[in-house]
Length: 333
Image 1 (cartoon, rainbow, N blue to C red):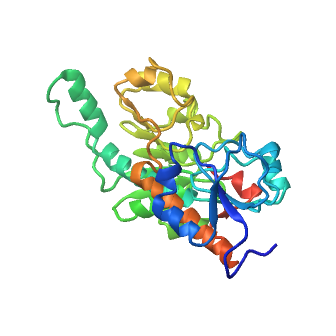
Image 2 (image 1 turned 45 degrees about the horizontal axis):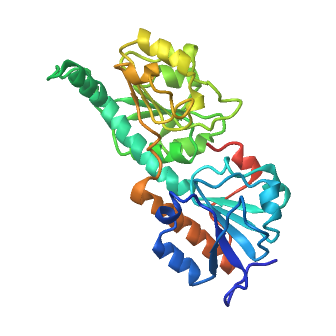
Image 3 (image 1 turned 120 degrees about the vertical axis):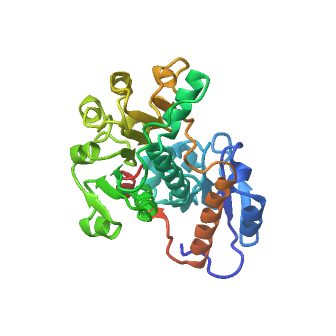
């Protein structure tokens, strides 16, 4: 059925974002904008009866997987608008099997991750975290040592997807060399970003800061383990804002204990959260943050804005700008 082009639709948009995020992502302003065009209703995917009036479902953090049982209660569903990052946690095979289209606000979330990464690159090259932790441990001032500086540094990107490209664009503003490992990246695209493609060992071994932006799947699970960590140059930094499973944490603890000159900044871990007392919380050359790189606080509203804009395109019969398919999903973070 072709989306309504004019007039008010006789169907509804459902939303089933978790309570913690339902108002910060779908703000009053966004809700009003949607209701101006089409009815907006709450949908409980666990206990709701059949809703044959919902053709579009807005999902996000806190939405359970869209299994066959859930979809049975949404027989008219045509489109899922995911107002968060990756759709991997909610999109099941049943979604694709029933021909339901999927769009994600991952590109809006990527902006926050790229900004966080960009900031951490600068802080790492200034040796900020090590000096701060050393001062805390000493209970007083420490020598101003280990400051590499930004100009002339080499940054390594593992993954040149949406976030990796955003990071590369931010880094292009500085006198930096950027290396990248991504077996799916096109050489012309990398060249346009000012990025040099290389094999993983060369990227790891040549980078003052190595930052991870790859998807986590069978092929990338623990892609950074003992052999790879041993390639890291003296006084370099490992930064992970992607997925904890990319890094073998047992190997990382052993490596950081042995190589005190290397620092690790981990915004994602395996498992997430790490148990209390984990060695990474105690090491003087590691910093663990609680998965804050993505959209949080007021940044969450941009996810709802993107979903609302995508809904307008659907209503007008225009192509969606952020649609994903099953094949593309396998390559996303």
